[in-house]
Image (tube, rainbow, N blue to C red):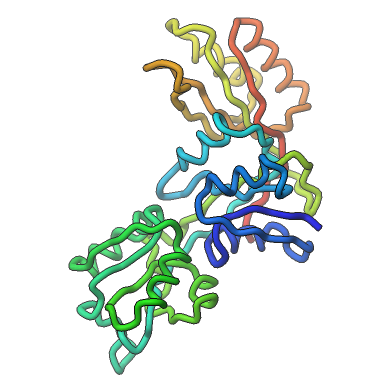
Length: 287
């Protein structure tokens, strides 16, 4: 049986993992901090980790990128995109009127993960401008805290599965500011992913420049450009070695074994830059 480490049961990570693996028999192991998710697989306790890496609204999850780069050696085995739609969750009898409408004055505090709060900032400003916002470790932890404090006037922002898990009510559906809010997840581990197949494959790399001189990054990008290799993402992140020293995280829409990509790598290395391959993997989109 496959074992998979991920953020708590009822979280978006949990829903996304269920989508990726489908009917495959999986032993899901839930952890609160993302560090424990990574370390579970790095230490051999699980086969894979599920890592949220990027969001439509908030962009890259920098902490998770840094863990992947600096803290563990876990190749990327798959990526997939999953909708991240949040809901306002609580005790219906406390927060809704007789006609089913939301009575905002009854809510004094809204709890959730900081990313989820940011994804719902417009809703919160418009309908609940008076409430205290409290950041917790996950959306499902927020739902649990609301469940354990009936009568306190608390509500949580979280997923449908989180509400089901803790037997609470969805008092307002889809409070995310943008309906096209999606999260990109990575599956990392030492074993190739074989539960599903995809015609689309991608490769992720890190490029470290040999020295900081004018045109160095341009040289790297030119190696891809004239070969018409599409880069779906390029992001600079500090190397943590000295101030002003960066590496470049690049996602490429091509498998690593492609002749054109190999020749681009050879050109980049020939001019003195270093390439680290983070993974070449199948890519899936939610339907």
